Image (cartoon, rainbow, N blue to C red; front, side, top):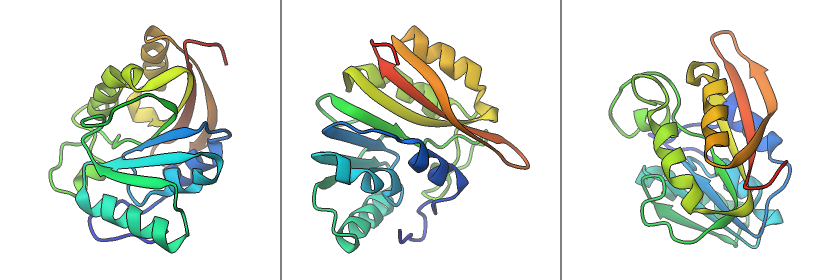
Length: 186
C-alpha cells in the first residue's frame, strides 16, 4: 500500500486488524480507511467495499491503491464516520483514531482520539447499529488506552456479542481487535 502526506501509514495496528479479519460478507464498510488497507485487503471476499475517511487525501490515496492493485469492486467516500453513508452492511471494519490526545490538522485526525482516546470510538458506536445488518460482523481495533473492557461492555449494550480475537503488546500500549456479531451469538 502506498501512502501520502497527511495519511496514516499502515503500522502494527493496521496489520493486526487486517490479519484478524477472518470473514467478510457481500457488503463491506471500511470506516477511517486511511490508505485503504482494510477494505482493499478484504475486497476479494466481498461483492462491494466502501472505504470512507474524513481526510480527502486518505480517500484519494485509497482510491489510487485500489487502482494500483486492480481492486475494481470498491468505492470511496469522504465522510465523517457514517455521515452520508446509507444502507446496512454485512461487515464493518473500523481502525479508529484512538490515542488520548487532542491535536488538530489532517494528519492528527488519523490518530487523535480526543482527551480520553474514546471520542471517535464513542461517536462510531452511536451510529454503527444503523449501518450493520442483523448477523453482521464488526471488526474494530482498540488500544489499552481505550479501556477494552469498557468498549466490550458498550458493544454488548448495543446488542453485539463480542470477543477479542487478536492482541499485540507494544512497549507503550497493547492493541486489541474486537470481533462483534450484531444480534446473534459468535
